[in-house]
Picture 1 (cartoon, each protein chain N blue to C red):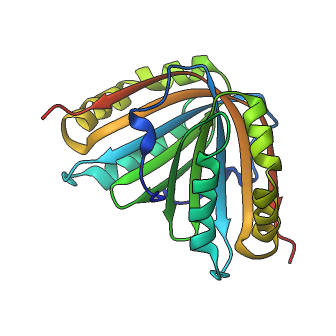
Picture 2 (cartoon, each protein chain N blue to C red; picture 1 turned 180 degrees about the horizontal axis):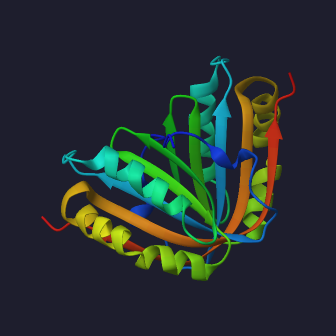
Length: 115
Length: 115
């Protein structure tokens, strides 16, 4: 799964569903970051209630928005053991700052250019 | 205002508030895009109910999340005249695909590394 793909332009169900908006500012530590980020996207995709993820990085700043069926799914993902270890390493190594926002998607609309 | 700044690690009020998650796939048309995007961030920041914005771009994919006091503020921003003209040009020129999601931020938490 490539982290810069926007998978959610198509495959999500109609709202309501939940999102986790993760905005981050990286530290200078790059050790094992890229492969761990990739692994977390793969692992998230295996969780119950996972609907999709959009993730974009520009220099040190990143936004990852993951989409979930309900709040319970988000809580279980937060508490997933491998993910917890990575969260801990994120604080000690990879991030200078981050914010997590849990938001209920109430409506959505899309545009796709016709060829 | 630089579009890759994460302004929302600090200055937002406590939830609840609203967010607009804009995920996009750019076309090959770059004409006037960068300055218009910058202008839209400036204009958004002048709207009633605007709280902040995070925006990150990686090659052709982008995620912009703007934060608003309430849904009415979001509606007014969508209908703002200069913004409407730009939305139209976005469809005809700058974007191959995009999705807009309106989501109510219910809770949030932040991490800031201590020096």
